Image 1 (tube, rainbow, N blue to C red):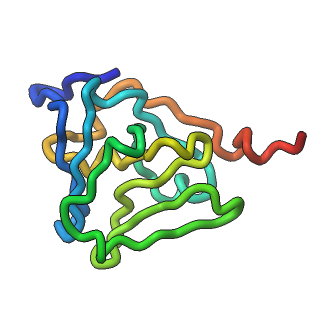
Image 2 (tube, one colour):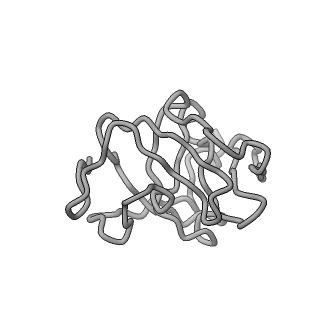
Length: 133
C-alpha cells in the first residue's frame, strides 16, 4: 500500500483524468494506492500502464462518460475504457476480479507513477482464467 508518493499524500478521494481532460473520474482510495502493478498480457504490454485496483463503487465518472469507449477481447470478461478524444486508457473492469476496476495510476492528479516502488510485474500471459480445468 502506498499512502504517499514523494511529498504529495494520496487523499481518500482523488481525481483522475485522461490527457485532454475530456474524461474525469473520482476515485475513492481510503488506503491510498494499493498493490500497483504492471502486467505482460497482450493488451497491458501495449498500454504500458501501471495499474492499481478499486472496488466498482470506488470510481465515479464526473465528466466525459460520452467520451469513454469500451474495448473487449478474448473472453470478453474485462472491459477496457479509454478516451475517444486523446486515446488514453483510464480504467478497466478486471477479468480476474470483475467486482473491481483497475485504474491507470498515471491518470491520477499529482501522482508520478514512475516514483512508485516497488511495482511488480503480473504474469498476464499465463492468466489463471485461461487455464483449462
